[in-house]
Length: 222
Image 1 (cartoon, rainbow, N blue to C red):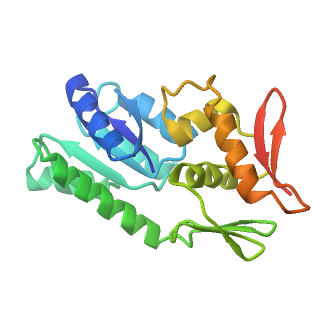
Image 2: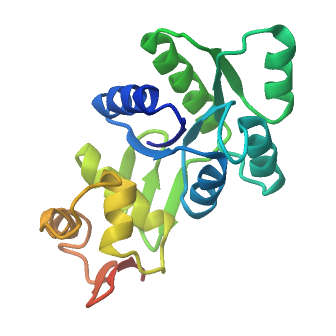
Image 3: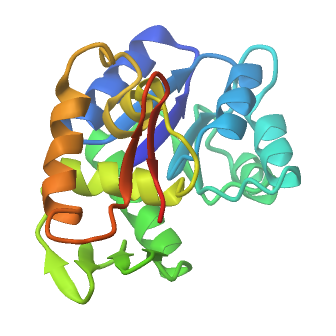
């Protein structure tokens, strides 16, 4: 799961980012509203944690613009304002939940989990290309009707390839979406995991689905 954290207080952002990564979330951080909008438009996020008081553009404005652009990712607002009318304003701007500072990190995690579960219920969760099928909700992958056992990282990598089927994804794109923003894309870890996937997805099948585009990246296609 990839989360965009929008928080301009450096210590607070660092604390939340570290805690989320310990829970195996991939986290990108934006420290102002303009950067948040830019990142949300170019990256597919599962959740956005959005502070209300931000430089350049405040959280209320950011949330309204996200919704106007048809970016319907769940938004959890964070703010030091806990009055009822402030909460109503945040929710009416398009936010899905509202958490007042200070808060217990356990509560933040619980609210994130609830929003992600709610969002999954609105999706079919089925990805398919040729005879390869992935059920995102059940965390299950089959090819030609036969189940393929994948590790969590292999599943995340294949999911990203399937979400971008027929499009070339670069090593940098993979490192940012499957690992994290500051992952060293020049290591051979991505190649190693691609080989793992090929052995599990393509080995024994006449039609190869995972292709290397030399000098560019990888593509999943028939």
